[in-house]
Length: 158
Image (cartoon, rainbow, N blue to C red; front, side, top):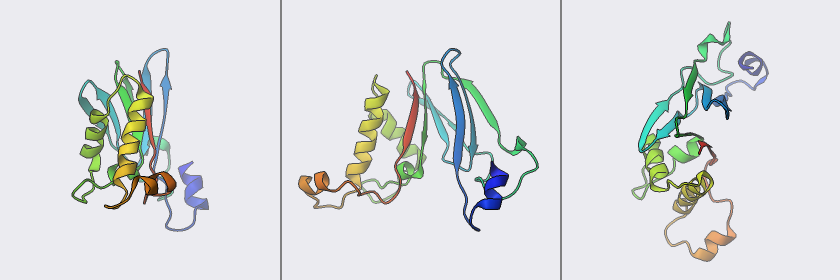
């Protein structure tokens, strides 16, 4: 896929990606990160990061797929999170990017037995922070296109 994209994408473009799979029966997660934000494994209140081991897709041709490190681990009751930079680059109250540590804090602040609710609440906090000071509740309800960047997060776990 990388080599095909390198040949067909417009010059100077690239794609960050985390590709993976989760086996419901064995609880095994396998992921390969190509230039993307690190995947975060949360067990209890502790996180383990799975950063990229390679450049994004379409940057350079590779002889084989060995440049993409495959990470394999069991969830062991935890949850794995993969997210776009719209999360880590969102601004805090001091107008500073929250970074990966901020994403971890966001997840911890909204942890819930329902993964769906946890992700909805974390996303809503970022969405609300993206408004300028003085924005009214009516402005928020009427404007769905308020983010400067994409905002996608995927969580897997119980």
